[in-house]
Length: 309
Image (cartoon, one colour):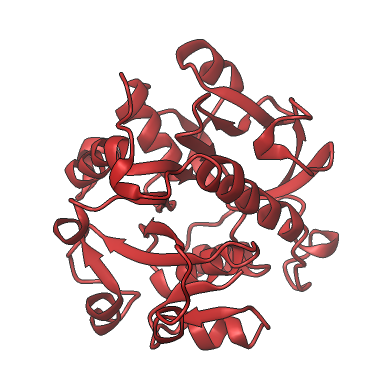
């Protein structure tokens, strides 16, 4: 699938080096195709790295996507050049009257921060409320899942005593569900979070369907019955070395982290890790794009029906 992005976005060359088909805006304008409009609210500190990871996953589909990056935090970034943010990200005021086929809200390193202490918590609420009438389907990832459960379902923050870090086995619960179509019965996915998502909590306090969970009963993948909301509590977008980078960063910061579970060969951080979740990550995003976005979104986005209470 061609993903349509600005010609100068760093991800263009990065993904082309991986033989990923990226269509620049200048080329896409000459094609008579209505691309899916996908908005990415990137909350991660290393924004360019996260852009590359999600665009890689989004590229694995026959659908053409028009990607727009959104920022809601205007504090000075220590990890992303201000020029990059100014050139490639829009503000909420720029798009608040527009409609989108899909919205992805990324994770954020805020697991130990109370919601009301998050600098951009009011803006998160604003975007989620706006999405109810302006987005066909929204995909929440990791911390964004916790934020959405609080805002949309009034579920208090659930925090683990120790950080969950590593690659964990999960099993599907509904083999014929659209979001898990093509999944193996068991699959691996990386996690890096303090948030806790007991599957029993999702079933007892929401109307969401749980499609996959860990062996310990932790919900991994769940969604609303109308397909307007999808939640993944891990990081299927992660590169092979992302968990290693986080682990060594924490060591340098004096945090003394636990070695990520089932990640380094022989549990030795000196060994180079291998990605064991790529096929699952690609299939998950492709299923969301196809069944939760493309199959239900209107051709004319101005005809989008608002979410009913």
